[in-house]
Length: 84
Image (cartoon, rainbow, N blue to C red; front, side, top):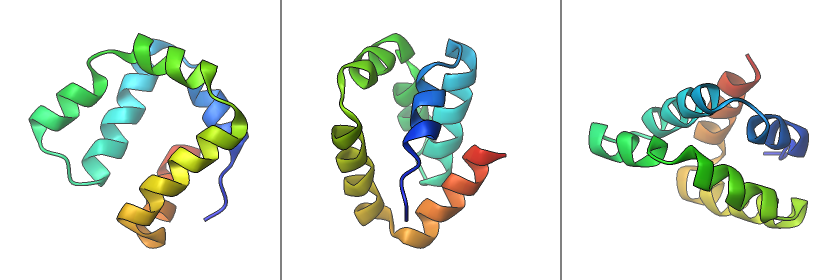
């Protein structure tokens, strides 16, 4: 799976509600339960701050780490949803 750093940057610059919806969608696609989804979207400001401090390479490393956990097929499905 090729990481589109521009898509990550676009997510970083979205409003909080859009980012929450995106995170929720990804968490649900990964099979997270309601509690896990709520935890994932509980503080988007912190997520944005952390992302803004990361280099492109660090972002790619984090995404790669999670892709290895879920597999390319599931990651590609999530990526397709994000690009809609």
